[in-house]
Image (cartoon, rainbow, N blue to C red; front, side, top):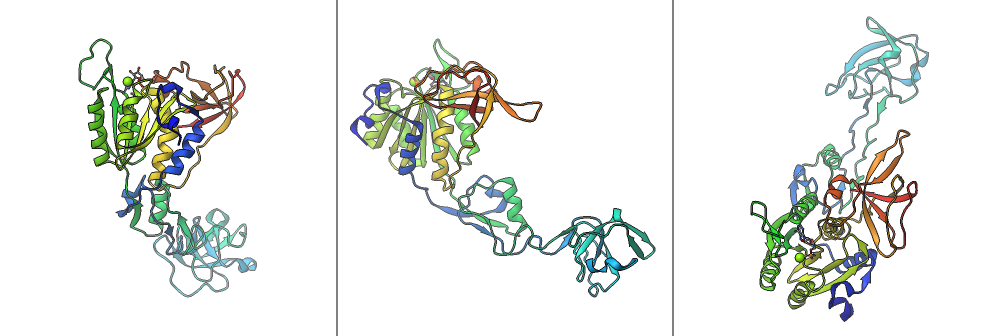
Length: 412
Ligand code: AMP
Ligand code: MG
């Protein structure tokens, strides 16, 4: 880190680095915070597994029927009809002697395939008469049987450590009978907005004032990451007040996030405070929206200083803070989901910065996806984020895009 990296001097004169470079620098600095605890399965939703989940038993535990019908021996194809010797319903297995030649068992979906049987014929292909049944179309060997261990075998790895638990994962872990799991400690994140012009909800607006919206978007995005939150409110552009907020954040949290106050001149406060109490890297990141970014350490906490403009806050949070918080929580790397689609609207762009324009995906009649711009792309127009469901990711060197061209999108 050169001196020039640390001292902004004049904010927008700070050396400009690519987003990928900023991410790589952050990545090489951060390490998972550590700490783990055992929780009841449902409480693991959205948390990160600290240990792999291993199947202790096969799922399903027994061969069972995938259809209502008759369980039979596939080698009995030459029998004129089969004798129905009993029944196997889900939860009520047939426990008599193994099936002998010419015998079958009435079976319902989920019923255990009885000993001796290897195949289930669906009832639509069988004609019952009293206690005999005639098979109108002989099934393939093993047809309509869900085999023991088909989903998981005992000893199979089910989920790796570092996995963020989804709804499907909850069910999968329940299916192997595990009632508790070990997850990493949830990060504690303190956040505040800076600006003399900002008012909190419920306060009257004076001339030139505006309501603080960044703490609301941050609240929403942080909540999606399952972190525990400490809202430090609105802090005026005053070094003593900013220091007090940073001190409280560092005492109480693992990570401090602030928005605003990183423009030309203003950034001096934050960078000076960080350098006095930790370590600061001020970068001009070649992305749009969101150019100035401060990353560092204050006391024992990691610090992210985001730009003030509401769209810049969201874009830098998604592109920079989200991966960083995932790493800190011990989550395994998950590359952004990006893919090419046709863009229906022209996009204005000047070469220089990687852009994250706001777009809306459209399902075409032929089933393919395309994207359109949501319109005005100013970094103060928060409605563009609300109306969008994806970023249109334009490389730094690209120029304006003509309607009909292919572009990369990243859904959110
Ligand atoms: P700054 O980076 O502090 O110069 O802020 C850039 C722009 O974003 C200014 O127009 C601010 O008024 C606006 N802004 C800063 N913080 C917030 C906030 N918390 N909510 C809404 N707008 C903000
Ligand atoms: Mg400001």
